[in-house]
Length: 363
Figure 1 (spheres, rainbow, N blue to C red):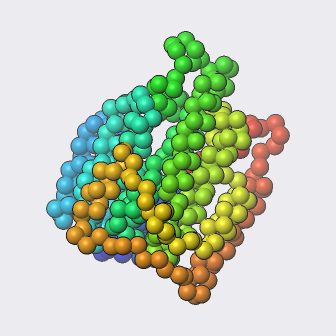
Figure 2 (cartoon, rainbow, N blue to C red):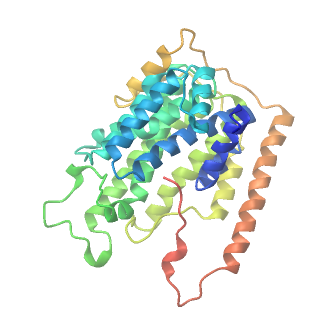
């Protein structure tokens, strides 16, 4: 008889993510254990949703099955799958609104339909659904339901997704996709990429998209100080590292066609250390920014999901809690250094392909 206990379900979620979500593993280690477990269940559901569509010969039918699985989760009768059971428990525990999950599936549905985005506003609407939703759900898991913090969280999700799109211009083109807004494209016949290199318009569009991502990062960062104290370092580290991808792209003259941007591990160490700097207390001006039009509906449904939305409670880490966070970073330093040594041992010779300088990061 199979083990269907919560601990067994969570272990299955961890195994699923361990197969290819190293970036999640890196960020999750900076979260308190309870939040980390809940985040594991959430990201496992997102991974299952992505894989169900990407690996299906009939993505539309796969999307319908996902909606049915979500129906069962919210009826507290999940299908016999550890990820579904863990997600159902997560939904019960945190009163997560169904509408946010529905928005996530809607964004996946836009991918299934091969939807193109004519304007930047339309692209932001897509990013709000596939990534802003996750930011909102993570914030609810961390115990914050006020509009200001949720707004910043949705902005961070949008910023990260725009970074993803800027990084993956070449890979998406190979798959016949283009997420860059259509009104940024040149007239027909002027968009040919010379010799496999990015066309001028692609570089310009990538630069423009990264500027938009930076704007969202700037709006989002004050919200991290409004999270529970022990959650801030992990989220800040993830934000710093993701934003740095844009800097790597810019340093390559905005070429995301012939190369895939990766943040060097030495730079990650610097960013991880910077994430430990004590966060400033939230201020009234920090909290004043209204939700963007594309994310406002997420903030609204998340706030309405609880009659007692909390107010941000600034927290100061105690010395022993800060020591725990330092321990996490020291452990990561060791792991990253070990990977650097392995890379040097297995480095290609000079006559091998130079394109092996890129490292896959999970989208």
